[in-house]
Structure formats: structure tokens, C-alpha cells
Image (cartoon, rainbow, N blue to C red; front, top):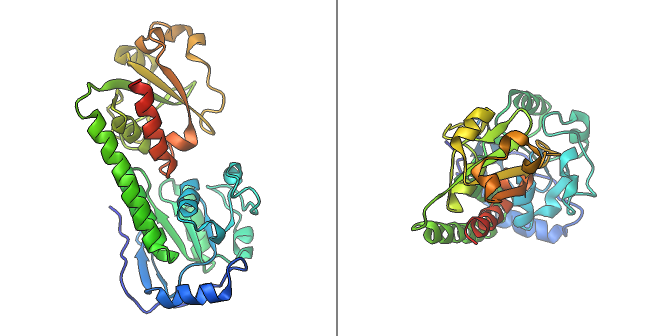
Length: 302
């Protein structure tokens, strides 16, 4: 459960202004800002007296949210994996999501560092950055509901609360339209491949499965985890109507299903219902996950 508390408080240090924004604009934003206290999903509370002006996001979805908020100018560095976004390509890289270089992070003087809650190594690195005096917030991002909540938190922290509310309202409307469109349709049984070989599937505990559901499909993997090791025997028994292959860091060069002899009799292969998708859109709980759900809806229901 999200533990973010947006409450008035007497904040402490004032974040530094960026060179790209006029000082007058900073002063105006600060004057309109209500001091805020945020408690993240790890139970850490950070207080801010003024809008944050220098941000490092150690998970790509946060970068995408800030860009959608019109706050891309606040980003002062990126991870090695986030150079594919044109808006971030020119920023200095500070290591990986799991192993950021603390010296490079400190050199950018961030008011706020954002991390994804989950794997132990990332949490250890977050604690190390806190020990160096940095403000670090970690959130679990695994659903559209969490995407909306974190977007509103980031809007509050950056002085873009109205923009965040407008964004989430628009996103909600799009999701409601998908649900209404698919309410009376028979669901399409879908398998989502995260990795091959050593088959890894999307379970029902992550954004990928929610994308499938919103698009009028049902995930044939019933496990509630985000990622599930799945045997090829179980896949053949499930015999999905449609097969999604994600391509990206976790599955960089997937073998086409037509070249996998033991898959040739799957219903999805026989019907030509195989779709290769961008991992960053379909498996990352960011703004592009809305686009993914709409794209998949069109593909499942031509």
C-alpha cells in the first residue's frame, strides 16, 4: 500500500535552483508551494520546504512521468539504460539502476533521488545514498493505480500539481474507455513472454498483465507474481489464443516462434496471432503503458 502522505509541515533545506529556469520563476513557484512530507513505500519520510529543482531517477518510469509533467528540465542525470530517450541522451550517466555510482550522483547535487522498491541490491544502494545525506524516495510501481498515485506525488514535489491532476484524469478516461469497449467482448487468452530461452512469463502481479486485461485479454498465467518461471509443457497445455513477445533488455534477441519447432502447434502460431512488443512500453509502469493497452486492444480486436 502506498504510504505517501501529502501533509503540511515545516520543511528543512531549500532545494537549489536550476540554471535553465529563471530565478524569478523559481521564487514564484516556491511562494506558491505548500511544504510537504512524503513517506515512501520503505517507510522513509522526507520533508521538502520548496519544490525540488534537481532530480535523479534511477528507474526509467520516473523519467517518463517527469517528462509528461513538463518537468524534464529538472532531471540532471540518467542511468546507463535511459539514454534511448532523446530528452535524456545528453545528460551525464551515473551508472545502472541497480548500481549507481555514488560519487557521480553526489556530483550532480540532487534535491531528490527516486528509486524503484523491490530487489535487495537496489535498496542497499538507496540506503548508501541516504547515508551520504541525499533525499531518496522509493516506490513500488506495478499497476496503473500506482502510476497515477506516484504521478500526483511527483507533481506535488515539483510544483506541478495541477498538471499531474490533469494527466491522471486523462489517463483514467482512457482506461475507462478501454474497459467499456471490452466489457461485452469474449476475452482473448494471452501469453506474455518476458524471456526466452529459460522461459519467463508475465504473471498477474505486474503492469503487463493489466495491459492485457484492459485490452480485452486474459492472462493464461494465473500466478499472482510479477514474473513467473513457466515450463514449455505448461505453455503447450495452456495453448493461448495470442502470444506476446517482449523485446528489450530482458529479451534482447528472441527467437521467432516460427523457428521454435516445439511451439509450431500452438493455437496462436497456427492462427498467426503473435505480436512482438517494446519491453519499455509493455512492461514499464509509465505513461507509455497507456499507449500499449490501446495498441494491444486494436491488435486483439481488429
